[in-house]
Length: 290
Image (tube, rainbow, N blue to C red; front, side):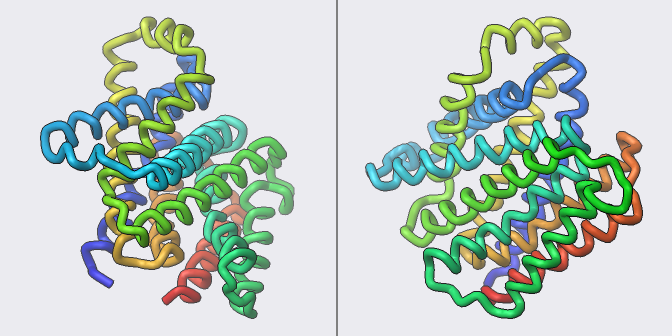
């Protein structure tokens, strides 16, 4: 396992953690979660396309089986982003990002159900920790504000993220080039989001403050999508999927820190305990793949 791969995953987590900043800055202008996903994906696909045209046109060449996998990974990225943005609006940045990081549990469930992995005591304990942690973070217990919608959206984001994790690992094991995988995943995400986001309405909202909003649109594409997904895909070539998910806890930690420092979100004692339980479960699951 190379140290550079570990660094790639950590840096990806920090950059993903900035998503809540862009969502909070753009939401007052009326952008929907799907529209924010659209802006993110279109900018990302354009940036990657230009880069490949200049540096390595051979990355555009893919086989039909690879293209089918790109469709799956692109749909998974679309679901991850859209559900996550919606969860932020329905709850908070800290709640949404921690619930998204239930992904390793879904990866584990998939591995047990379809890949023949054994369900041992460590995995059972991790499931219990995540279940209790989610109840605490979401506010279901301890008398905190509870949002059913926010919790469901956050868990859907985690499920989508786990699907991306599994599909990306399969792509790398089959020798797919990281740049090709990243570009085509963004492109599929862009096509899906353009079909469902009402582009005319999106343009009209952007026209209210074009200079400022275009800057945010470029930022949400480059800093929360192009760079982190590329770094994450590069890292996945060298380390197990579970380890990558564990290192990715940098994202909820940084996202929570950003939300508290920049947007003055408050964390309850129960919420902090829930975050610790979920992150502990993620570490436990990562150990099963070492």
